[in-house]
Length: 180
Picture 1 (cartoon, one colour):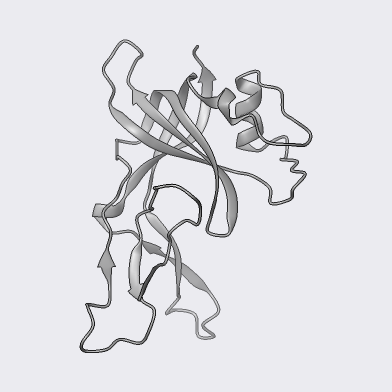
Picture 2 (spheres, one colour; picture 1 turned 180 degrees about the vertical axis):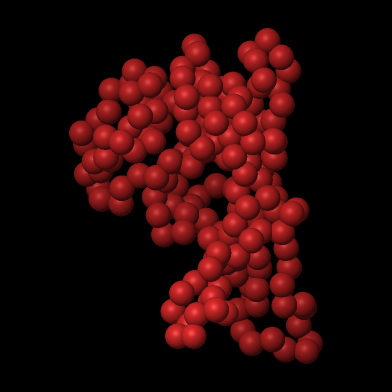
């Protein structure tokens, strides 16, 4: 039986790049210890791009609630698409009556798009779709997984695990301005 170390828990067909490990101790009759799943998100050079939002979904990943917005990237709106389905992860507080901080990326995005922020109730995710923005894009190069630091004699400090080159993907880091 296998489990995905970094697989998100939500309904849908999305599977994150993950390192899959056996649930039970390694046995000689079983498959190899580590199997790499292919990356499902595109990769582009880090920089500033024009993004058109495609979809927004509220989900739980790594025991955290967040909104995943998928965007299509363009160099300019008149040019052909450079990458489709680049993710943008926006954290959401866990509380039922959510109140995100005024400086959070999600609140700043709602303010940038002139969408009223509800005090209670569901997030107006439909209002995020079909908007053109100038955004900053970067790469995800480290796993959420942490390993013990060999330089720490007590073994309490953890260091991030770098992703293999085949699993590195691009994400939207922050919005810069609204275009349309």
